[in-house]
Image 1 (cartoon, rainbow, N blue to C red):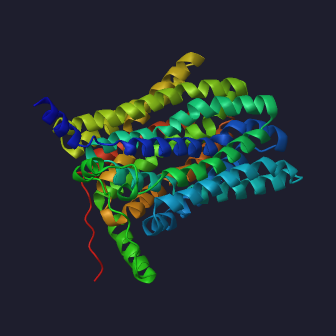
Image 2 (spheres, rainbow, N blue to C red):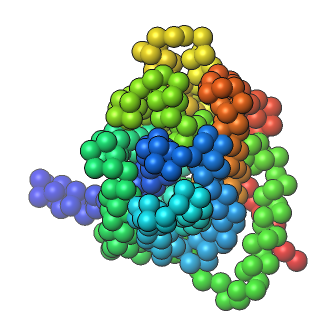
Image 3 (cartoon, rainbow, N blue to C red):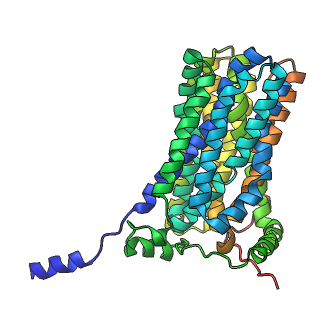
Length: 451
């Protein structure tokens, strides 16, 4: 009797958990992705001292990354849907790490004007290389995770932006202080090149992965994951025509337009943090570069915590029977209302209160940053990469606008950041408007095929 029971139990295969290994991998990659974007914000003060950049020039240099990042989104989405996340993501990591490494050599250009041009060009190239990253993350999560786990998975990889600040901002500040700004780019570039090789070794589609058993595949697929291997289109011209047909449909969908607008507004705060925040601490609050690097990690810790909690809370609402619309909107709206408290920094003089308000704002922003979960929930199954790229394109227009607008606001106000913080806080409130008024029900979009 006991022997029969043991045999029966042994016959039931234990479900593997390879999807968590894949999630860890995209979390690590996204951490490096954001750390590489933030290198200039950490080294910016030292580079301004060496090359004489003013605030407006720094604003344009900061924006160079996002010009290319935004312009490259649609091609990146098409590449992901055509060639898959494994190969496209590996090439992306390799190239952006190479361009990061090359930034260490701009001091050899020979003139301040030449350094500005070289830095702008390399940051532009880096932005183009990074363009597939987040659409690839969304594509991987949609393939590897069922709906009830997708909010948490998306929140975890999206929270890597804060984890990058927690780990790498103090580290890069220390390296700049101890060895010079050049070594920051060497360190990050070499590490990224090694990461590209690791991704190729670890990543496969769920249906093709040798360590995934049928129980895990069933769990993913029955829960709404897209586990099927990618089908290679037979006709490239037909595929391109179909893709543009899909673009028109996605851009004509009211729900998605509301989500796109909201992501732009959320990213205003993201790019303030990635570009001007350490300089704000140095110039407006009188801190050293090393102090700014350490202080910047505190709001980042709160953002990371809020990001994970937002995803867990959203998925918990789904498991308790709430609709997908309620489960995603409640943390987004609540979190972004909380993040508007960043405006309060204009009305306090004590540094620890400023840091507390910044930390609270980034905690709220973390809770509300569920846009990538919404993309995985709503993207048409045949165009996940393309849908994620359009979303990312709209969102990262903020990377062009935010550094330039803040640069002008700071320059025209005699170095004051008051207008900049109001600008950031108002965009948080616009996110709330977008989800409450423009976005209706959150559901997967069904595309019409071209005649």
